[in-house]
Length: 146
Image (cartoon, rainbow, N blue to C red; front, side):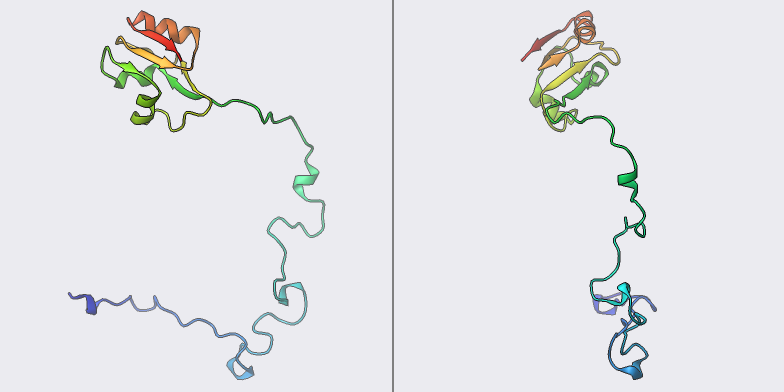
């Protein structure tokens, strides 16, 4: 088989409808849009969320709660995630980013105690829960806060 032998399968290529090209074409004059009305006009029609003039859903549902725009979002690392690092190694934000444990630093890295740690590591993070610090120290490591 050669490149010049390639062709699309039968029926894959279709000739597009030619709208508004005279009454003899079958799609002339109104070009298949019918007569009059909002949908026959250029740019006419309603957006997907329009409910026919009924009070729309996003206005019927009451407002609830509050969004704090100053909330800090931390990149979370758990003890079970640290098993991939070799024993007695120093792990900081760069190592977390490089290993893919953390995608973005955000407001800092927080160490949490989900899972267990079996090897001694020196971990440098911005925040750590008390139970996570106990878990690292129980494995013979230590946690340094940056």
